[in-house]
Length: 272
Image 1 (cartoon, rainbow, N blue to C red):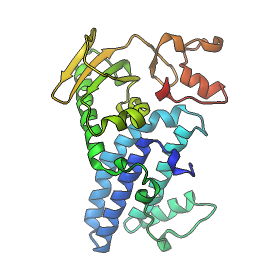
Image 2 (cartoon, rainbow, N blue to C red):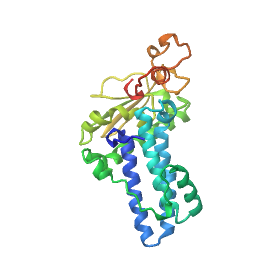
Image 3 (cartoon, one colour):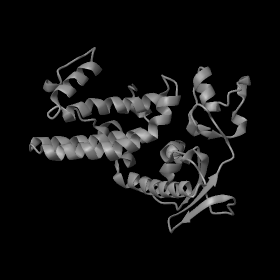
Image 4 (cartoon, rainbow, N blue to C red):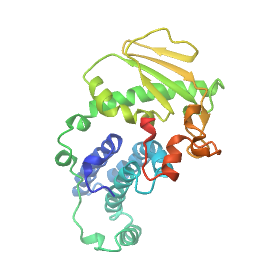
């Protein structure tokens, strides 16, 4: 796990904040013995928030080095989630939570039934980036993501693409209170957030050609282009041909995978 929480990726910070808020809600309802509400909260969390997050981190978990900061960042969140999740369910699934907690805490095992609730207090750990704690920012980002997801599904139905990794997204958004934060701190995680091989933020709307879908409203323009890149057989992302066949490796691996498999240092897919 990552000991210095400031090394966590922004997407991971978002999910830690989500976990923290849910934890507070569960504790509140347990205090009033509202078990049925706790069950609903946990179910909704699994079906909605957790499924979204797992989608966003799969590439990092599967394709990055074991000690990669990108992989460790996601694993740090998952470990903290598991620790809290078992405490959420132990009044309901007592033996399951007891055995599971004993397994994941072999070295410093404590009985789960005598532990205090553990809040991940993100307000104290990450007070230098307050915007991450504001739901408005993430509501805005997921507003854009939901629009793009609908566009991708429509393109799939029309047989224009098979999956989101085949496309290049050109996005123009009007400069608002989130724009500078996106460009300065979140830009390197946009590929992962939108689950695509490449996304570009446009400074202005020019003459965009060869797009397979165009969307616009008062706030943004979105152009979807089908890329002519090559699919990496390991991570399934699409990359320009210039990233292939490096070091005489003839197996169609992208540069990111080559670095993660054969070299001593790593490079994020977000920086290619």
